[in-house]
Length: 304
Ligand SMILES: Cc1ncc(COP(=O)(O)O)c(C=O)c1O
Image (cartoon, rainbow, N blue to C red):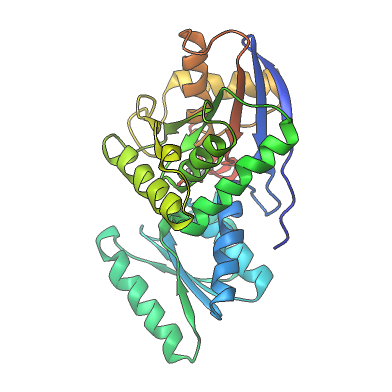
């Protein structure tokens, strides 16, 4: 692996001791949490002797972009199944994907599994050994990446956090951070701000990943308790936003130089801001915002 720690910075914000873990600067073009996951997932792919990959996502998926880039770095053949019709305009993550020259197959959402299976079979027919990656990089290796990342942040901060906020989607990022931070200090609470999913589905997905990881690594089941996935700030769903969230993105950029996006990190930060403003975060608390990226989503949207 070629992992280097992403920066941890301190920011003055609303009277709390706020740290920001800059995974938006993860060393892969476009950065973000999906780069961290791809690192671990493709290490497993290689360990299993595979030399081709099939995965899926939406047209602005950070997961498919990060996977495709990492495949190129490692010399692995990559096929991306996009569950959308081919857009007339190529921007953001899709622009990078096209530039990389990986095979892109567009299909309806209902056909994703069938098309992915067909692409796996196609690789095998060509004498390759293909590796299947779930959408979002949702798997044990993705959870492991963020379990390790919690220790990375703790080593950098040299202190415990009371609360950790981040944008949460398919759930492996939250699962890894939850178990990692609980392992470091049981009192630390990770709060995943949903970017789209509603409960109970969102919490169930994270719980599943947490238990899978805890069982696999024979960790104390206490580490799987108190999962908080907050679906209050989804603003209508995936890739949707509202004026309040857009204002927070603008004011954070103006006040701190940190760039957020409306699909992911802007929702996470907005949720954190609401927790602080409503008094749920005690003054003087040590708070960590895990910046999961989203710059290419920002560049692809006309909402802001
Ligand atoms: C920038 C960004 N932040 C957060 C997330 C959520 O990560 P996870 O799917 O692991 O919950 C995603 C998922 O696509 C993402 O691209």
